[in-house]
Length: 447
Image (cartoon, rainbow, N blue to C red; front, side, top):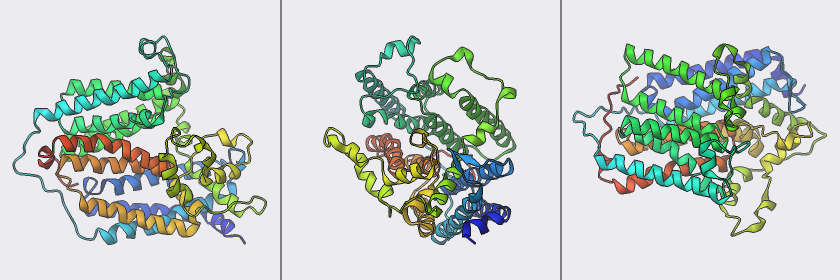
């Protein structure tokens, strides 16, 4: 009997074991400092609960068998077993390094940031926003007509160069910096609205989600865990979920700017779409299946897609015009072969990080990289001083990049996100070195 058959026969038990492992991980985090002390770690577990546990369980119980023309009904077991295996090494990797409890102490004397900080943030925001718009204009887009509503951009704007277009990611960290440094509320709201409008033009909603996540994390650091905060948190979560469903239900209408046709009634939403948008585990199952299929020839890429393509991605086409000959990377080639549908190359289906590790080194890759991932997050937590505003935002950025890495699982792209999210943070740090040593005016207490 193939191991995939054995795991499929015991899939419900594996779901239960994965739920227990994730619950233990969450419990350890809450007991040893709470959400604020272990943000990327805790967020990793929350993402894993949704993508590796709840979504595949939903599809298993509702009898979903096909993804991109591929029957994955016999691989639900492996689709749960491998994340369970990874979690069994991620948790020790994090807690073996992070054995000593390190708490964020609330400073007795709170020094507000200087007015210069707010001006720096606003100036940086205007410069980066203008860079993205100019890049779009150079590519032939009539920016004025877009803002006036006389022109739509189809499935999203593509600027002259992705090197400049990706600076849109930097606006996310600038909005978070604006919140943490106490930028005028009206100016902050205007910045958020302008950012969301630009993000909708670019056709990628992940930037909107990352901004909302980042603001939520920052809010947790600034408020005590009291009854009022709990109520505000619950209401905020409901609003956040509504917003996620709103942009999910109306994704293409928003891109086309057909605002009058938007469906805003939550009672009319198809909530199964929520699980469809978090179905990456099904794509993972197709990957596990193709390595079992003797009729399809695939091999492990030994980390080429994860590491070598970081440098390939960095090479401008102006420097190396034949750069396209390196694409698609080996990881994508495996994905194309894994699906049976002829249109698999244009499906845009993303695997999760677990399958990425498997493509690299098989089950050994899942063990090794989950353990190293835990060690890395623990080392970052120990090294960063969360009473420092700049380092606090960097910690939040690590959590945001973790979301992109787990759910899109292409390491060079995740590195891109990390770089562009960090650029304004380091620029601000350069200009306000003395300010970066001032303690964060937290009202938070340990949770």
